[in-house]
Image (cartoon, rainbow, N blue to C red; front, side, top):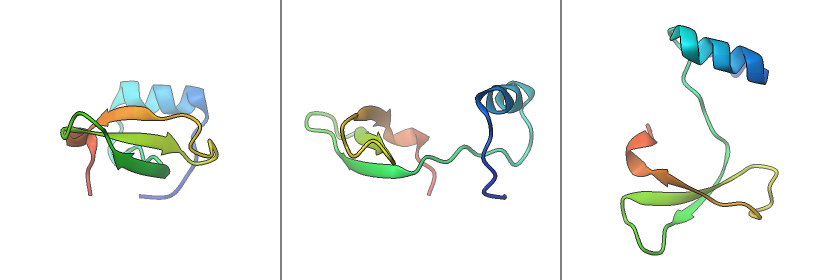
Length: 62
């Protein structure tokens, strides 16, 4: 898989088409959620930890 960047339109189209090899990757920071062990908190790179999003751990593929 390449580290190619997609525009919003390209990404949405690729997801809709189910193109093989498209595995979205998020780059940023993670910390444990305070109250739910089945989730983590994620802050996208460039946000300087100003915005945190809760993500279910089953979405994480190592």
